[in-house]
Length: 233
Picture 1 (spheres, rainbow, N blue to C red):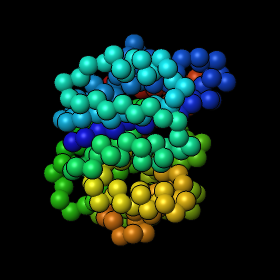
Picture 2: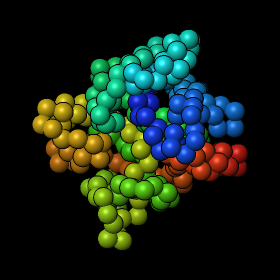
Picture 3: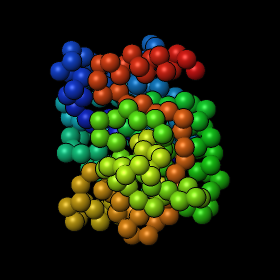
């Protein structure tokens, strides 16, 4: 399994709230966010780890350039207008087989993640699996519609009450998803949620995998929430 981390955001909301450290280097219970993900990936069969950071994040660039792994570490330094564009920039490292993509601030239980990865690797029926959760702590959640087999039938920005899940921001996909990414860039389709909609529109089969809880670190208060969540494991 190849893994990828989008760490190219500016973390502007954290900066406004007095957090002057780049988001990837923010520590949760003594471990930087970027290291937490890398270590989890290595424990879950990583064949490579690809990371994109923006051009202004010099401390993060230097930190990762010094890092040594026992698998290839592909570092892309480029400022992009959105996470979907960041995904495109690292997609060249993800063309062979299945891959798992997430953002640097995604917080989850490792045992749930390991079960997710095992299901992805064992699956032969779907073009991808996506983490979902019933826990909503997001300013703009993406709701995920599923059928009785947990196959994803659509993504919506609002809920009519029938959607049980929201996107957890962890995407495991196969190479068949990459031509759709290229199509989106070529046709001016922006944002990851619109890319996900395009996957469904173009007939790819996606399955939802439920996690009990997934958090994002967008605000200073989220650091405390995330530490408490991880400390309780």
